[in-house]
Amino acid sequence: MDYFSYKNQSLHAEDIDVKALAAQYGTPLYVYSRATLERHWHAFNDALGDHPHLICYAVKANSNIGVLSVLAKLGSGFDIVSGGELARVIEAGGDMSKVVFSGVGKTPEEIEFALQQGIHCFNVESEPELERINAVAGKLGKKAPISLRINPDVDAKTHPYISTGLKANKFGIARERAVEVYSLAASLEHLNVVGMDCHIGSQLTETGPFVDALDRLLELVDELSAKGIEISHLDVGGGLGVTYKDETPPHPKEYAKAIAAKMAGREHLTLIMEPGRAIAANAGIMLTKVEFVKEGEDKSFAIVDAAMNDLIRPSLYSAWMSIIPVDENPAHKPHVYDVVGPICETGDFIGKDRELAIAPGDLLAVRSAGAYGFVMASNYNTRCRPAELLVDKSDVHVVRERENLKDLWKGEHKVT
Ligand code: LLP
Image 1 (cartoon, helix red, strand yellow):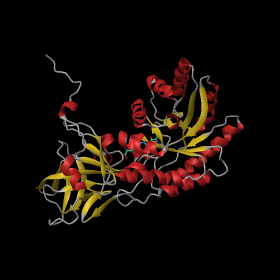
Image 2: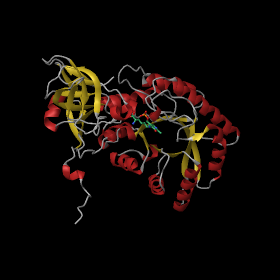
Image 3: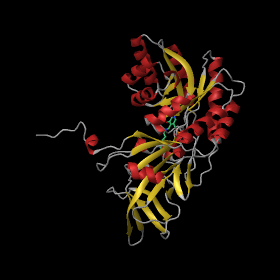
Image 4: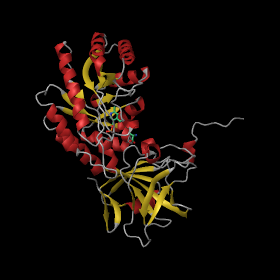
């Protein structure tokens, strides 16, 4: 459930008519709803009930500092994948003791930065990374808390580009090698082995693969325990899907309950989750304006002012994202359009074969754009990235100003 709805046939974000936002701040424009972000975060947090747990929002899904600050105020933890994301969490007021650091290629500088901040844990993906963290921690006279990302080899049944738990992926440590790598970690002087983690993919629409992965991890926890290696937390990653079209993913509550049920009797193991999309996607829309309507030979095109540089999911993953009119009842006749941007690439589209009743000047909203939307935007074709707003009931916060041309060539120099 989210807080974008039609009131008097006009789309609203919480209590605000989005037409007024477009008029004041221009388009393309990202609009987020605070109530929706909070509701989704609570759905996870509440469902885990009394079991010791930590929700570490995956910053990569939407790293705007306004968004992070809303979650930080709820007491959220954060899953980061770079020193840059860590700096954002600091800026947003996040609690460092609730940060987990994922990713396959952490640099010595990033490791040092995170150690100095006193993060909760490094989610380690390989033996060379263990050695690197051990060396940096030794240099600083610290002990680094680590978890090993185990590849449970389950099929997440999602898009191959966002499936990460299979043997063929670059991520994690193979289940068969896990005990050996844990023994190595336990033997390194400047490491403190505290956890186990996994992440099997994104936009999963069934609970089954998550539960299968957890079963495999719990078996490994017991095997390690028998060898005297005790861990204190289990991190099941993120990946819960959302409805873009007709997918029917489990509700976060249902998903979290299924996971918590498997943890019964293991109260000494804190459960960590890293949801990104399920918290942010439906908490955001992208507004765009129809510039022209063009009748082609075989197709009609609605040429809008947003492009693949603003929202790349349709072009990159052939992702279907819902496109709706901001005014529900315009006088125009419905017609089928490809909704395309102004970029010079055939792959520049936001949606194909959409029935819309529109005319130039009308506003459209792309739904579920709060996750992997603005964060994946670029300046391709020397286009300024959109502004981002966060609506809180009838208040509007500009959480990122629209870029201007000077921003785009900052740091570039002419050659004389
Ligand atoms: N934890 C780890 C280690 C991850 O790699 C990811 C996402 C997450 C958590 C959060 O997953 P989520 O709950 O958001 O599914 N750009 C793609 C999605 C890439 C996801 C990468 N990893 C898209 O637009 O669909």
